[in-house]
Each structure stands twice: as C-alpha cells, then as structure tokens.
Image (cartoon, rainbow, N blue to C red; front, side, top):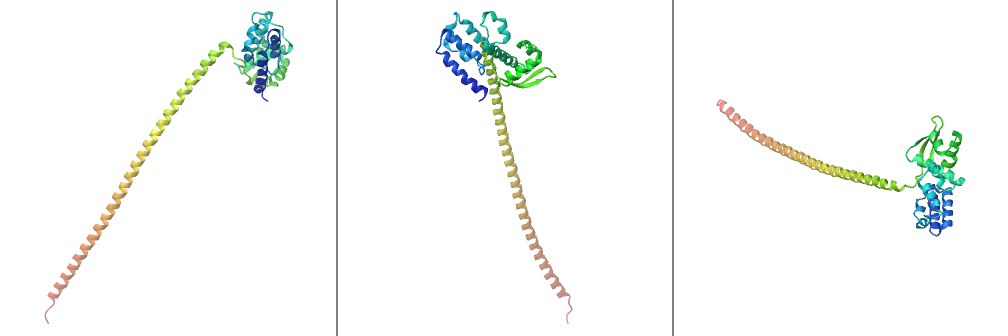
Length: 260
C-alpha cells in the first residue's frame, strides 16, 4: 500500500472519530493524530465542525498545535512553545519530518547546513540518519545524499496541507493554466482548420492538373488520328497520280513506235 492510500485511510478514521468527540477526549485524539507515523496531512481534521468547540477552552492550545502540524515547522514550534502543549517524542519527530517537506516544497537541493539548523541536528551523521530512517524509509521523500557537496538532492516529496492564504494563489495559478490551455487549444484548432483548407486547395489544384493532363492526352491522341488520316489520303492521291502517269507514259510510247 502506498503512502497516499495509507494516509487517506488513517485520515478518514480520525475525521470520523473527531466528529463524535468533545473536550478532553477530542484534545486527546488530536495528540494521537499528530503522533501517528503514517499521517502527514491534517486539514481534513481541522475542517471537522466539532473542533470549533475547543476555541476559548483549556484545550484550545491543542487546536493551535494541530494547526501548527498542518502548516508550520519545528522552527515555528520553538518560537511559540510557551503557548503550546509540550510535545511527545513522536510529535517532535513528526514535526521535523514535516519541516523537511516544507523545505522541499521550494527547493530540490537542500544544503546540510540549512537542514541541521532547521532540525536542531548537531552533526552530519545524525542528519543523514534522520533523512534515511525517518524520511526516506517512511516514503515521504526520495532523494540522494551527496556528502561531497554536503546536500540532499530531493527527487520526490509528499505534499503538505495548503495554508488558507495559499488557496487563493493556487486557484489563480489553476485559472491561469486553464486560460493558457484554452488559448493553446484554440491555436491548435486554428492550425488544424488551416491544414484542412490547404489540403482542400491542394486537392483542387491536383484535380486541375490531372484534368489538364487528360485534355492534353486527348488532344495529342486526336492529332495523331488526324495525322494518320491525312497520310492515308495523301497516299491514296499519290497512288492515283502515279497510275495516270504510267498510263500516259505507255500511250506516248505507243505513238512513237514506227509503222511496219
């Protein structure tokens, strides 16, 4: 089972449970969700109506923590730790995994120095162990560790939840893409029409040429027939003249012969 399918199944279980819980039970469920090793998206849980009941209560910090796991990083937690619940070791690991995904959203080459600073890792060995064991083995990222260049080359990274302010930008990006696609489609259709029209012109031109060739063939054939008929007539006339010539010659010869 791939990570997306596994996460979808786990997510639906938490969404269903959250819809039936309140107060401390609901807050405990959020801790469980943010600690689950196969869950890296939380916006669907945030959209459950029951969660609004935690606002303004002693459990509101649990809701804030869930928002942090949906959109924030380990650095964000450290900056706001005083107003948030203490994290379990599993939550610390999860938030650091999410921090790697956040960095991979915009950059496909992540320097070791940047990663060590973001993840509070003190040395390269510890960083590489975390990237291999907690990120690559879990399937949320794929890439190559380059010790010579001291960087992690990201080939794949799972997507995170979209922040509310990112939705508008995403919609605009999709609208621009749709407009570009429509323009491209119209351009392709125009080129197809042009190609069809040129094909028709070519067909008409070819037909005209073929018709002219046929006309020329017919003309040549008729000319050949006419020429043969003329030759036969000429031969017939010449034969008649020759016969008359021979008859005249014989009569002349007879007149010249002496009488006995």
